[in-house]
Each structure stands twice: as C-alpha cells, then as structure tokens.
Length: 404
Picture (cartoon, rainbow, N blue to C red):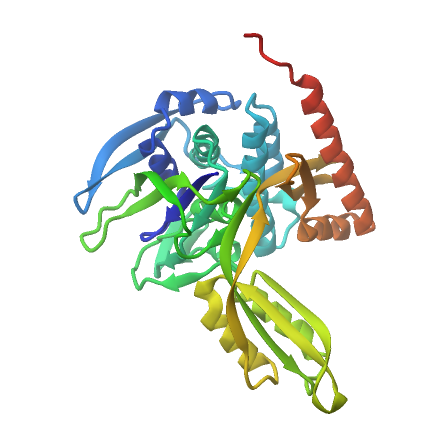
C-alpha cells in the first residue's frame, strides 16, 4: 500500500504541503492544469527551489489578481462541484472545506451555509487545498499518518484583526489531535494546514513501519535562523494485507471498578477521547465478593499511553490500570462528502476485503443536520446511504473499459 508520513517538525500549512508534493515529483504543469479545471481565474503557480537551514526544499507561490475575494461554504461547494476533477479529488477537497465550515460555524455562532471563508476561501486557499489533494491522488497515496503537531504562540494579523496563535479555527480543528508547545512566537500550524491534515490523515504518532522510497520537502515563507522551516513527507510502502487493510501496533489499557458513580462514566469517556483515545468501551463485570462492576477498556497509539493512563487514574475510582501492546488490522478508509437533499454529509469510504466499498456517514455531521433541519437523524443516515448508492451506480454506469 502506498503510504505517506507527514513529518511536521516545523508545523504545516497549505503551501508547505503543496510544495512537498511537488518536491516528491508531482509535475507543476499537471497541478496547474488540474486547478484550472476549477471555475477560477486570475491565478498562477510560481515554484522555486530554496534552502532552509541548508536543506533544499520547494517553495510554492500562488500569484493572484484579486487577494481580497472571499466565499461562503455554499460558493465553495458549487465551485468544486462544477470542476471536471476525478471523484476522489472532489470528495476529499469538499471534506476538507466541510470540516472547516463546521468549525467556523461553531466559532462565529452561525449556520454552516452562512460561513464566510476569508483567508481560506480566497483563491490561494482553494488552490492550496485542491492542489494538495490532486497531488496526493497523483502519487497514489492511499494512507496518511502525521507526526504530532507543534504549536506556536503570540498573535497574527488576519482580516478580523489581531488574533491569538494558534488561530481559533486551528484550535477547533485540532481537538483530539496530539499537539505540543514549541515556545516559538509565530504561527506554525495554519487553519489550511490543520484542515488538510485532520481531514486526510488517519492517525497521528510516531513513524509506522514502512519501506521508505523517497522524501520531499515543502518550504514555508519564513526562514528563521533557529530551525528549518520545512514540512517533510516520507513516501513508501506500508505493510498491508492484500491491499485492503493495514496492520499496526496499539496499546490497550484496561481496569475494572465497582465503586464508581454511573453518572461519571459519560464524562470519563469524553475526557478519554479528548486525550486521543482511538476507542473506549465499558463492559459489565462480576468482581470480588460477587460485586457487580464495570470493566473499562481504552485503545490508543503508543505515544498517547501516558496521557490516557493519567486520565483514567484521575477521572475514575481505579487505583491501577493494566496496559499491553496489541496488534490490530484496520481497513482502508478515506473521507468523502455525500450530497443529499438535506445538504452535504461527511462520511468515510471504507474498503472491504472483497474489494468493494462501504460508505459510513459521520455521526456528528448527521446530528448537526438533523438538529438544524428538525428531522429525525435516521432520515439523514438513510438519505446519505441512498446518495452513496446513487453515486456508485452513476460511476459504474459511466465507466467503460479502454480499448487497447
């Protein structure tokens, strides 16, 4: 399986992602041709080789005629939907902007369709996001994992004035993602970079096992003396099972309690997921002296073990937690957006062992639409299922074998 690891030692931004992909061999002319399939005008790509701390990288400039234009989430959907792009590129690009729209709606207290994208909705933001997704598709990258993300501090000027670093949208996007403070007074993770990585990466942590083929470096705009302002992407083959699944190592934490107030279990689960748990479940158990109890089981990546142990021991009545490494096999999945008459629904496209695909709607996306529209959530799920079946039927009807 074609695999990419995003090594974000100096953060991540949209132009850094695009630069690293071009550094990996995606032709600039090809990306430009794909981007000009969008109903956008007045922009061009300018690429240069540069150095950061004596390490060669690729710097991408998006030259535009009108830097002040902004768009709504509705505008973005119409723009990308009208483009003659491959379906995976359209779906993944829409998934990135959908994630951004939901975050901006929460920050500004408005409906998702009323969200105005300023910096990210400008032509350069659209070029960065769609161009990055095109590059990933060109390289046939099927799986992405990222390192934990370093965050800067201080303030940055945007269209709304001075805002704290990291920006509010970045903070919202990174909920549940492992981050750490760099102590550097600059913006290391931009909203565009955060939206791309949380939408496309299936996990965050140390570099998994892989057979390394090549690497690429995307350069940021600044050139500080104390660090190389680069994003490094490592590409190769990851251990896979017949092309549909990946094996990896996780840590399983478990404990059992018989003296905990049942009202606290819901809060504990929220805290565990906020600290990066991959899965959390409770099971009834019979404990010593035939007392009814509850067995708590948490699955996480190795680097999140300590934080989750701390949370379990702090937020539950347990006085000891067992933990062990465990192998797991996960099916390939990519984020997609399913169009329904209720609006776009975020979903996962999961590849099954027989080579077919299953579309699974995201609960939070369905929940928000159900509350906004005042309809049962089951109807949203059913509409998403119908939409995904219709999309697959349309693709099957439009596919014809090429003559040789």
